[in-house]
Image (cartoon, rainbow, N blue to C red; front, side, top):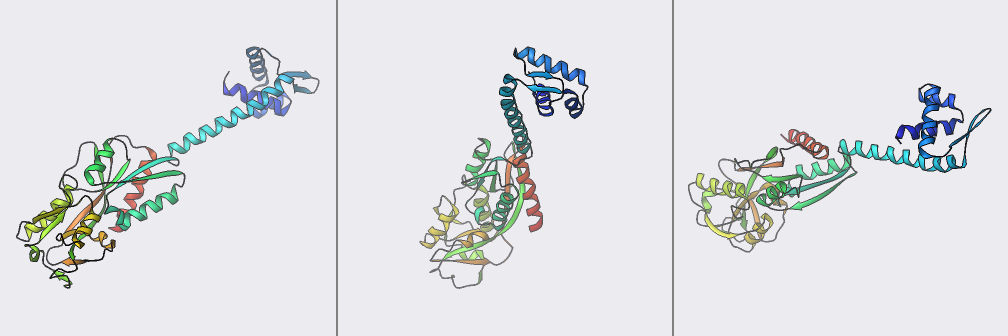
Length: 298
């Protein structure tokens, strides 16, 4: 039995006339009659009783009609769901982000716009450092991830530009330079630097070390922190000084100040990572919106 047989049966049942049903279906009356007879033979019951004015359903036909309508309805719903999934309008999108990325205005605006455009896609969020998020991407635990990326690109991953963010110096409020509006990075040559381990966030680590070297000194390695928010807290506890993306200034911790650096601008890239392989529609839609937002912020 095929779906077309069910459609033929319901058309005849609703029209109560084979000729009118054939016209409605756009087929000839003889072929339609043959299909109805074949369906009755396959089921082993008579579905219609012929009258002088057309046909009426038998008791078996009445019983079959109720389920036949449900079958066609369920089939239509299944097709619509498949089409929606194919357009990326339903499903689940898993998004990873570094602690600092969450503070970048592009990220929050992008996620909000995506939710408004695709309200039936469920979003799940996972926080981690860059190394963790790239591993999550490889393990398919996330579909996309906002990360800080340097010059190296892991195999199988593509990166989409989101923003270039300036870096700020963060000092304990008790620091000798805390009341300055701007300071030279070289003024911190004798201070220990609180940083994330390089294996956790190679880009941020290398940006800080590179900026210090360009300023003429090798940074003194201080306490290591698991996340950028922890960097700020450790600076507040006077473990040292650091450099953080400007968006981190939204973390208002008592006992720290954020200061601009004199000289050559120090910046770091924020990118959106995704797998290179065939991209599901829901992920492609998110990447498309990301490219629009990145262009608007350029």
